[in-house]
Length: 355
Image (cartoon, rainbow, N blue to C red):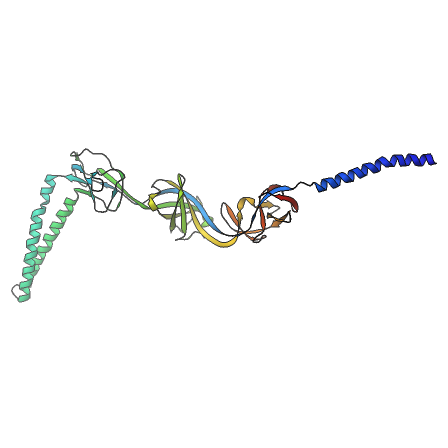
């Protein structure tokens, strides 16, 4: 009987040792649980803008191609600012003469000098007749005949001046020479030839087609930020200038025109630009990077850290743009929000904050 008891004890002892070892190993695993390294930020009040992004090619608000109104000998004029002949890129002012076309026969036929003299004579005669009429020296008919002669002389002189003005290619608005076809000085050119192209691009226009879902958001007068991909450091401001009230049934878009204040002429006509139409803005609200919001089981969640533990927070959102999103419910100011390392976290995961 004793021998049997000894055998049982001898058998149980290794089992007890094995169980004890397993328990110790389990405790060791608990004590050495891996802490997920994360980076956090303290939630602070910020502002957020919601905007509609679009792209397009800009064009000048004023643009004209001037042609010769008559045939004549071509002379390109000197630019007083440079002391040289007008050239591409020169700034010009309204009324400046860029090109002169000489035609002596045309000038003689205009008879500008004789018509000017006739205007002076008829004007003096009319004033004399008016003075005499006030004194009773001439009849009303004589006065009106003198007035008619004066008016006809004035029209004749003005028409001759208008005809002679065709010999001068003048700038209709201040701007920049952007095209200047070459003609040899002193060579005769025909009527209707392209002489010079002028643009004023101190302001630019941008026609865009926006998705119909934004029709209720986009309003005339809203601010617009504009950048060019090749000169992205220069951000220009503009406004919504016009909005079409109808939707294109084929593209499901509506047309809008943006007016851009081209400060320093940083952007040139023909450039491809990106525009952001600011439709709404909030200040002093909770804003987080959009890429840290996790979607799980039809919920949006973020993780905050409390006492070394990651807590899962269900959130509600508000305004958003391509980079940021407003949090309206779920986290509060000064929460320690996980911004890196959140991908593998679960509710109540232990973490190591590495910032």
